[in-house]
Length: 147
Image 1 (cartoon, rainbow, N blue to C red):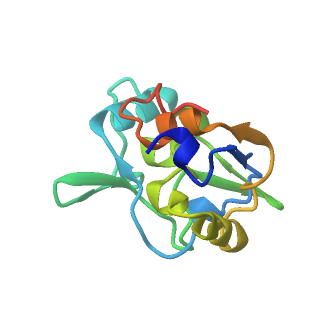
Image 2 (image 1 turned 180 degrees about the vertical axis):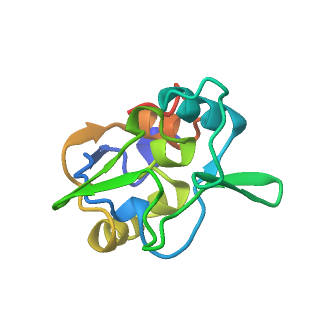
Image 3 (image 1 turned 120 degrees about the vertical axis):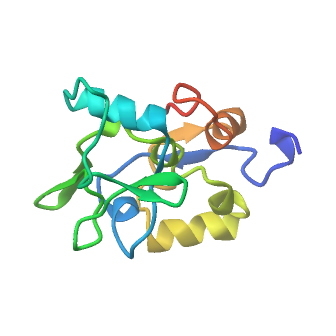
């Protein structure tokens, strides 16, 4: 399907409001690759390129960031009404591609439901055109997922 055939052919708006909703909630997984772990560790000043067990856990053959007892991502920092990612510039691919996940893009209704229930930054701010959305959604590299 070409960009002009998609329901979002006129683009979609998104701007992070720093609400923290996408970084908290029920237990889940924020999958990280070896490259993600090394990038985060370097950002945190760790010369060995490793994170400790309080920050990353093994799940089968994969790794996931850990969560605090309240469900927040280990790297989410709350300051009053603002929640920010302390590793935002080096956040993992799963985080970098939000909200342009395939399940959020199934339909206008799906997009608006996530906006209504989870992400107030959807439908606000910068307009992303279909080519940008597809580049982010299908990103295989850290650079391709930039936005």
